[in-house]
Length: 499
Image (cartoon, rainbow, N blue to C red; front, side):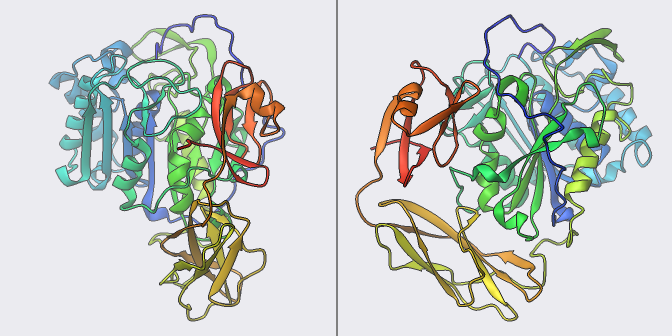
């Protein structure tokens, strides 16, 4: 990402946002406030680091994909904090003085940082940020008490400045190329790695999260900052929307990665929501925006923000890395609202004392159905059953088994179950159980996006193509982009691969 340079003029089809007037209020949900975490790429990584230091009492884990140390650009020109520049011990000492002097007042107590879990990733072919600034961030964390067991740092070969995944997202760039949308199949699941660092072993991911779980919300309720968009996004798994207590993770995009620039590629192609869907994790995606007005910064002169970066340079005040910083305070306010639903608090678990059902298993597979059974939970008025994170039962299940129908042949699915008490509050989610339907493999179709729409497998909106049923974004609507669609139900298609 050429962060401080104007983007060369190019013809880009932009997904039109519905705007703040059409966006809904950010929902208030039941959140385990003892384990809120944050991660980001590039400018988002710098911002994640700032949130972790400024609000160390809130954020228990920080993930950095190609970022640098706290307050680096507060004292040095931003170019000294990226482009693989070496962070000297003198620079780190100056930054540490800020942490020491602000601790307990302008930022939360620095002692909290020692208890955080830190995940760090950078490619050895990343020349936009690079390993040296990350090394500086690592040293800074170590200087503030983060132990080796709580710090995971990976430098990966043949990887440029990009968010790493292990699947092909429509429109993604090559792993060794620093290019839009800065999301790449590198054979490494970055989202799984960072979320596992924070939350332990994860249940199998859902590669087709329900479109209804993505919510565009009104960001103007939290800020009028010119560098933040009018709307943001939040992914709410079905069980979290139903009242179960869930974890909260904040995912911050890099420069040139906001929704107005690349559509939903950072939101959907990074893999965060695939893992969140089956593991009770709400993912908040705040959105920055392009700001072409020049602003005075602390150490980099007068600069505009033409690439829609989160503020790690000081465009919006000298307190940009403190709790009072306008963007930090706005994101913290979003976190506070999401975490203000009934039942929120520390300790994890469900929204009531009802435990997760045990012994969940599948049986009686046919080409279109599967029976799911589980052990009874004392005090339960009934149960909800979820397939791939989406509730499948209409009314409450009174017994301890349920037959799920309308499935695709020769397809593997994952189910979880949660008990519901007499007040209608859902308890903790069970471990997943998988099962494979019988019959022949689901039909697959490889064609241009235009051909898919003509054949009735997809539809187009705003110049982009969407798979029927799953509504997955397939990329530009034209005869040049080729996509493979797998039919998993009646007029229901997902982006996939075929034998």
